[in-house]
Image (cartoon, rainbow, N blue to C red):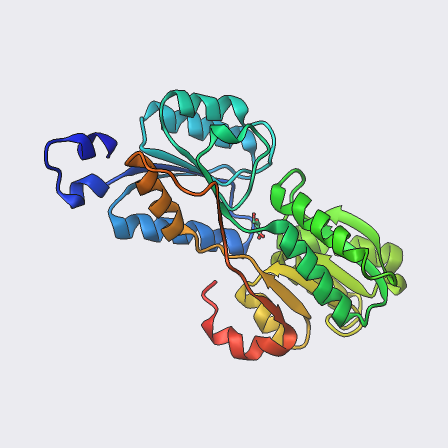
Length: 304
Ligand code: AHR
């Protein structure tokens, strides 16, 4: 802990045994499960005491968890924000208690001096890349429906924004419907069913803000008697194994990777911060783009 590192001659072992609170947003997707696992595994590997809280998608639960971490005097707080607004008060409480706050995977729009770093992806870039891949798969022409992530989450707003920006360079592509499927497979399926009911013959492409909703779309399209990946092209974000398998099966057209395996980076940052050091304000993930023709080769190496 911080106190231990100030003691006379702490062993490296003792100095590193941190107590960390992690306010996770939930377990809505395969990606999220992989992120939780990465953080739990890395904490165990380093011998940390990890206090884990699953907020079931509710910001109020995350705020409660953070307040309880502050009371327990943890060394650092890690949070994957459900939504981007409404964090100033509780982050200020952590700052007043001298506990660094590390944002993992999703950003916030509060005063940046209230958190130490954001570790995660460039969602705007992901949205742009998804648009480029979908445009290619659709032959630059046709109508798109968009399955949005959770309302108010930076991963959803920025993926929407990036895609919309890139779409300006593709004059014969158009988004005809957009709705949230909450980053979840079952909800993605439900929303796709309603799109198919109202606009079935008019849809040539699906942009899913994550692969889980893309998998839901595959099911809905098949149940409507159409061929996913062929009659209706589908592109998603994340790079989960199921998406690679679906591409190998000819049912999915591309995935834009978003890395959930953030445990090592999160705790490297925590160690530096606890020792009083500074880290980059945005520790950006490095990610690939996988169109269907790269799926077969990549599938055996996918870890989530
Ligand atoms: O914030 C990252 C997003 O949240 C992932 O793309 C999605 O699968 C998750 O639920």
